[in-house]
Length: 361
Image 1 (cartoon, helix red, strand yellow):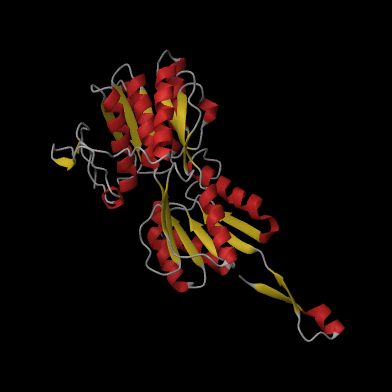
Image 2 (cartoon, rainbow, N blue to C red):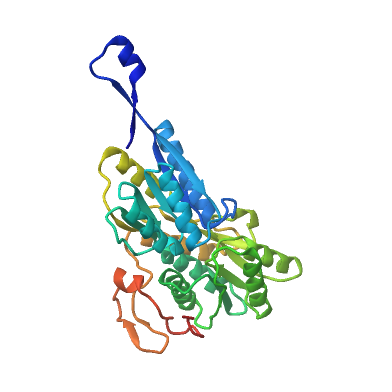
């Protein structure tokens, strides 16, 4: 941390040792979407506000929203470092290379990259959340709620994080409904309301009546609400944030990403001198993955089962990827009772048995 010298009083009083006042820690955040997206970026910004609340005038936070992945990201991260940021959180997978490139130029600044895996310099840490835990819960609800036996998943990019979610949701839907079919739509964006809405409408036209998403806007919720107003029966789940404006239907539950515990912890460690390079992957036990209110549109028995799963995952008594599980081609992946390790999950590049279609390259 930086200090500024208060010289005037010391000189006037003839003091041999000047007094020092500690500058606030400057904490930067780089966002891929607008803070009002109602989803991913909104939740990261809630974490920023939690840091301000926790530390008061000991911190100063700065942020830049709607930063495209690529060259623009490197420029923005560099500018934050030049502005005197002590620690910078870059909150999208596509910022990975840019984060490491800037970190090489600013060894005294700490960099934290969300959902990535590259830590090419000692001042770069990574952090992620076990979203697949939440997908298991909503998959269970989806398998019970569908009447057409068609559930949909709006997918962003074909990276392990997203593939984990698709597989977890399907596995738990199929456990309660062996006839269920999953329709996956790859939209190649984190935040594009128009594309997300089009994907949701296309699914509804195909007979999908439960929609999940790994994209950031509320557009799929709005598309489902529109369909219901026209006589449809479509259910959705809030993504990243609660999206409760669409409750009690179409949104019947949600996966909430709560980054506040992690942000407060890391800023606190930097303040007290215990900060170290890490690769964090928290989930329900750490309070980073939360299931939002399950509405009364979900039958009481199904709600109770979903909440029991949350309790079991939180207590470490259940892992969503517990065998027997086969890959899409029928080959064995996990034996009966075997639990997937983090290495296997972090490199997941296949669908599980029962999902149709191919994962794009």
